[in-house]
Length: 128
Image 1 (cartoon, rainbow, N blue to C red):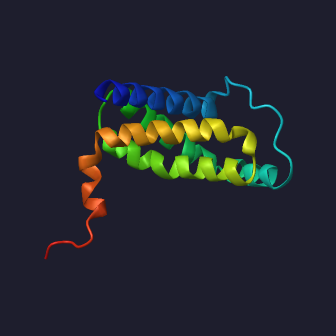
Image 2 (image 1 turned 90 degrees about the vertical axis):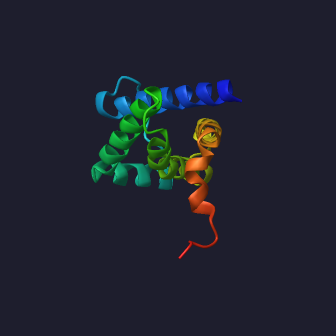
């Protein structure tokens, strides 16, 4: 299981490093803007510069995962990003759902290796 978690961490790191860098350098062509609600949503995110923050988070988390430093922090930063990617593709642009599901599985496999760090989140009561 240790090798699986290392592979998942590296793949997740590469995934978010590449797509985070692509947000700033545009070396992977995006293709045409989605139509309908997905296009309007995407346009609003880019025009408001919201995506600059998301790309920065992706880039930072990807670097942290690749260097195996502050993995729990990187996973915490990536969790809402992955949830939003998954929900966007689930409800507005289903063509990207396989990549969103892949990122989700990689996140789960990586988080499983550091699950003890997140144990406090699942405590029903906090000791007084």
